[in-house]
Length: 465
Image 1 (cartoon, rainbow, N blue to C red):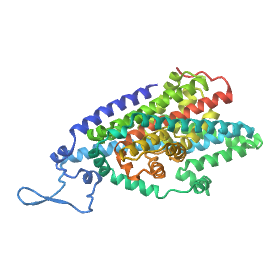
Image 2: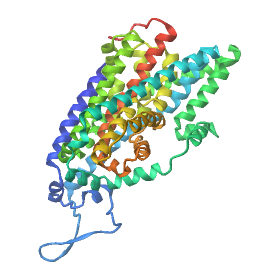
Image 3: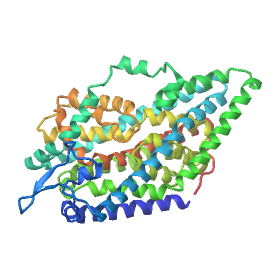
């Protein structure tokens, strides 16, 4: 119970410190300690690959960076914070792959009758599809109602396009490697299950786990019991690992969030403030208008108690920006704090972390309309209906990692005739919004798991208050 409060305190402290650093530690502060090119100094090399020089007032050539003890101390603090944050995310992602494998094998094998798996799968995928369509429709409605793109001046637009040009080139290069629908379907089937586990390809791991669990369900219990017992023990081991990792959570959350807040300049937030409010307001509406009724009507639970029980996973999802990394925490919250059946949670959440990205769907709806408004492109009703379909499909294909939806956003923009270069407009705040939409993504998985659990098992078990 102490960990959620510790994470929340770390988030608030990170916001305060990050804003302070943004206001007081800029180029002038770096120059005062002998660093003119902070990017080259922090990366350990100059962009050109050789020492850059400047001419001082006496006409002498001097290196751009002449750091002293204070500069190296600042770099040490920045590097240490980066290390702690990335260590936390990696530890969670290490736990994600084995917990998906063992949990789904146990969950599917324990169903026994293959028809139960089919029914569970249909209910899960059906609710995923409904919530995704509702999310992107909500995003489009908000963007059309408030028209945030019309509030961006021409000067701000040009400045944002120039500032985000480099990030756009990287996203465009990744989008150029996109595959056809047939290639996506073929890629779901692993050629080597051990390779899928090593690469952390969640969709392939899920396929392997479902097939293995289904085969075990049809075999005599006397033969499968040793293997299932081993999976159960290994699942418990991963649970212990997660418990140890979560003790580091407050410190790691501060290290992850503080640099994000510090990097957001006031001018960027001012230019994109309306857009950010539309996305964040849309995500909040998604929670209240779509998720809360599902929890109340289908899961027969108190929405307030449900969200409270899920709060540790929501906070970790916000700080890590990764549905996959947050998966172990989501499962623990559902099973231990909310009393959802392990059979259901262990099937629904791993599948949802790969196939259900409601927050991403809503974000893409808002982003496409915003970019179209800024670029002066009028979207017809037919084009907006196609956005609903495309954003839903893109949300299914988006990887559960930070920034994973940008590639698919380019595809959606191109499909409705909006210049893909417009994605550079929103890159400055994408990291912050990625943190927010990850919360909606993992919450959507948990909501569907609770609803399916009620459908499969009847009355909900007592949950933690």
